Each structure stands twice: as C-alpha cells, then as structure tokens.
Image (tube, rainbow, N blue to C red; front, side, top):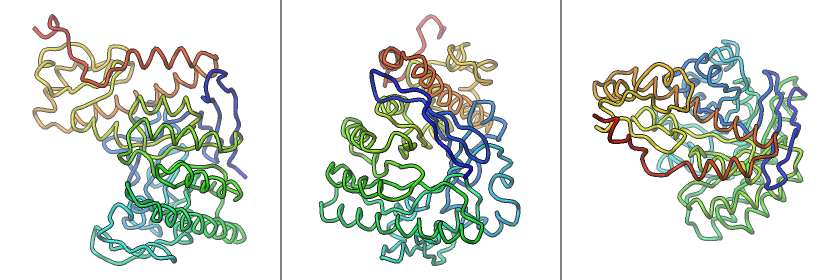
Length: 386
C-alpha cells in the first residue's frame, strides 16, 4: 500500500517525535500543520503559495465538496488533486463535524446523519459507508472515519452514547473500505477518531476499542471546543500515551501556535485549523513574538515587516504600514499577503519543532518559544511609530 509512517526520532525529555508519512503523492515530514482547503482551496492562496511555505499536506472538506461541485464532478475531472492543481498529499475529513455543527439542519440516527444542505435545503444522508465512498471518489490520500461529535458540556450518558455510535460507525467504515478494495478502489489510508469529550474514562474506552481495529492512524476528536487549554492538553497527553508509537496521531482543529507546540510536546504528529488564515484575512496574524493586529493605528507608519524574523514573501517585501493601508482601503491583496504569512509562519514553526526533536533539543526550543511568545498583541515601539 502507498501509505506508510515511520518514526525517525523521539525526544528523550518529552513525548515529542519526528516522523515521516509517505503517500502516493510524496513524503510528509511530521510534525506537520495542514492548511484547511475547505472547498478545494485555501482561501486567497494558490498551490504555489502553499508549496513555497513548505506545505506538503492539505485538508479538504468532504461535506462541502460533496454538495458542491459534487463528488461525481470531481472524479470525472481526475480527482481532487488534479481538480485543485495540488501535487502534494490530501487528507479529507468525513463531513461529520460540519453536519453536527449544523444541528438545526440534521438528525442523527443509527444509519447515519440525515441533514439538509445549507446551500439549497435538499435532504441528504451521510453514513459511514457513504463517507468512505465520497472520500474514495475524491481520490484522497488519507480519509477519516465518520464519528459523532457532540457539544460540551453534556451528560455522561450522552457522551457514552456518542462514543458507542462512533465505534459502531468506525467498524462500518472499515468494512466499506474493504469492500471498495475488493473492487480495486479504496486505496486511501483510513484514520479512526477518538471521541469522549473531556471524560478521561470514555476517551480511554474509545481509544482502546479503536486500537483493536485496523486503522492506519488515529485522530483526537472532540477537543478544542471550549474546554480550555489545560484540560484539552491533559486529554491529548492521555490519548497519545495510549496510541501505538508506530502509527500517526492527528489532533483535529488546533492552530494556535502555543497549542501546536504543546501538542507536539505530548506526541501529536499532525494538526489542522482555519484559525491562522481566518484571522489573517481579518487583519490579525501570529508572529514569532505573539499576535499582531496590523489594522491598528500603531502601525500606520511602521516600516518593518509583519515579523522581522520571518522570510516569507510578504515579510521580505512589504511593511506593516502598507498592509494596514490595504486593509483599511478594503483591498483584497491585504487578505492574500496576510494569509501568505500566516501559512508560512505555521509551517515554519512545525519545521523548527521537528528539527529540534531531530537534534534532541526540543525542551530548550519549547521553553524559548513559550518565553518569547506572548498572548497579547505585539505592539510597535514608540520610536518606530513616529
């Protein structure tokens, strides 16, 4: 099979590790941050922008792509890679998060999730089997099992019910992939998703049963939905300690730099989130020392790049003053330039973390990063504002 994962180094002072995922579309060095290409595009960015940032794996959204343009259209045009002109690897989610988040438009039953399209109100059923067929039709490299995500806090009975259904759906998804492979299809890797919210016992039970199934990797689901960083990281540490070392671990929906580094320290290999680029399109970016709101008046005459320590195309050529001007003028170029920096910054951060693991200095790297990175806005010195 084209999918492989190998560990290259393990940091002695933490659970951080450096590895390599191999798919039919090349190697992905881990830890890896995945930009989110919801409808087959990372907003405002081209595939060349992603490659230039060092990105090798992007995330596609099964729910949105299945509704528009439709899996049949994507398949007829050569699959998602060719459709979006992306030569690297693609991971697609199962669509479960999207239909669960649209709770006014869906109804969960054992067969799957019945929902109404947010586009035209048409009715659809997403089942563990159809999620596999859709992702196979898209031609993804890594597919995700359909799971049931619930809002927190929730009664323990509701948490157990969702875990039970997630496990039943996981088995059905694996069985469907096996049927597809009998037909010469279904060559994508498949990850199971651990649920259980913030209940340690339920997460442990879910993880234990998933480990008995032949998944190619494991995802940590149901976190970063309002439970707070401390509790979320506690669940990450527990989950990663239970997952096998020889398979990749994917923490879903995490994109704040502090969370990313802390997750890596606990053994996470892959992460994704819309946060960096969504914030960037609104004029807020992460830089090496924290958060910068480039729209603020403090940067009206600031000649410095967004991040003097960054070598992305935006930081090499443009000033904070110019970016602020573009945002205030409503120019689309502002969103694009800020997004270029946002993706470059995240991909560079995980590359630096990987290098630190490989060189057995991750503890020092982590300490320096956390000391330098501040949660409040990074303001320009008074002298440079004149």
